[in-house]
View 1 (tube, rainbow, N blue to C red):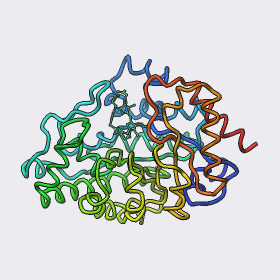
View 2: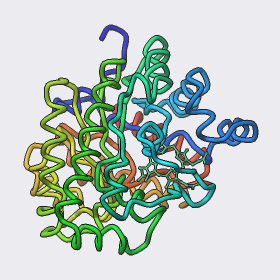
View 3: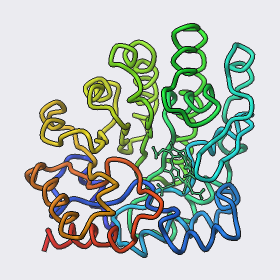
Length: 341
Ligand code: CP3
């Protein structure tokens, strides 16, 4: 990749880099002045459906912060529109599903995903980005469990009671639902790779709601099949979840070239559990609200905890929160770049 910053690709392969590459989950969003201005005119789905706009939003953190990777601007729910799901993104709340899936009819109504027909705008956004980007582009999808949690709960949830009750009550039907979502996301990610994505990340954001025993029984086989389906694509895949310390070993076994660590997971502990597997993380997003000296101390602590081992992608433990001061995000990037100097 002549002239292109490929730090993240090297780190994802476990190769040594002069400094850890850095990007942020949710690096495009409401904490940015530029994004808030755009959102006065367009809703999130309107931005996502206009490739020129979606590409511009994807590029903004690369230009404003100097991060080492771009992440496609879309939402984990974007492909669900193409699967016959009636959903809405509610400001300050998240995705709301108007007819939650609770029975066989609901599962059967979930259509197979044909990415070129259902989400041509996502693929077009990737093609536009590939012409202008000087850093690698991350494509992404929600993991089957995390998507199922929205589809069954009908929206964001605290206890994940409905989705877990469904899983326990209707095990065979649950596996059918997971199979459909696995198949759809495998196709979606493959289409993103073919359009030009250099890496892929799978967000299993809410899987930490499960015990390790439940993860193994109800989720892990589907994740293993998803990663198996992605292997032939030949791009690194980052496997991320929140509250997943107790699941980390099983998540690694399920697959992914890189494991995402949340901020509850001590990095040295993860290194021990994972061996030589590259990791991504894991600054607490709330530290971006802390005074500079505290923020600096914690960034340096994470670097020290990694101890210069190859295969570290610097990131947060979860996404950037709305109202995060932009200058603090920029400061973290500068700090990482100073470390190399
Ligand atoms: O910069 C990036 O990271 C790329 C864009 C991106 C968005 N959503 C845009 C978005 C990504 C990677 C996502 C993933 C996503 N969406 C996840 C997984 C990551 C995570 O945080 O665990 C989840 C669980 C969702 C579901 C979702 N969509 C939630 C919980 C929300 C927030 C609701 C709110 O209003 O606070 C959304 C909406 C959403 N997706 C926004 C953005 C920028 C909010 C801003 C807006 O409404 O314009």
